[in-house]
Image (cartoon, rainbow, N blue to C red):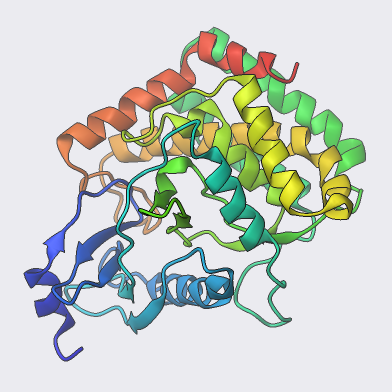
Length: 328
């Protein structure tokens, strides 16, 4: 593509829904996934190429967009861009299309693991690695983001229970697969044939498939995108898990089963810390010394207001107690 900046300017900018990338539908029908970055961000190219490798590795599953080109970071496009297929569809309708999502996850999780030396990150101990992420988020953002004592106490109590569980679980071997990490339903697109495509590969790694199952169905995930906005019943969540487990075979299902609840609890905590970081960093002034600071400046005002309302919902004490009652 001779002049990618011109092609992007002439394309159709799609509504932004997050802080990591935007999307422009090009005149040739393909999609430019434009990675957000500050000018001269030294980590931008590595992040871009990691996403590109994820698109290549997941292609055989037939449930992710095809990658055509990698556009390096440059002036006017500091994060670079990936040119991929545009998937014509919509967000999943829940609970009716949970089965399609389960099918997509089963196909992706069944892919071979990356070869040694692949840039795709690997968690040999997903329980410990996820707990570490939660601990770091709690230390940096929890007290600043959640000031209501009852809500904070519930989260601190759950974190304490996970620390105690780590004394035994963190030393047990855990089934590994390609994991997507950011599987809230808004990152799926259902096409006219009913196939659920997964379109956000920014956080692909080798890890626990149980995290993807949890993130697809937790209330903090299913209300995140404005086109989904559905809190699932426990029976609906159970049906999703059963649909997935039937697809992966009895041996793999038996290996994964003991990890479903522990990783669901950790995934909820991880999501809470993600939202705490979102709240703290998007409300703070720009810190030039921190290229990793998140910003929601690119979001439309109504989208920004929606996401902030969803964070308020997630931090509500009654919401937290309701979610925890599902496993306690």
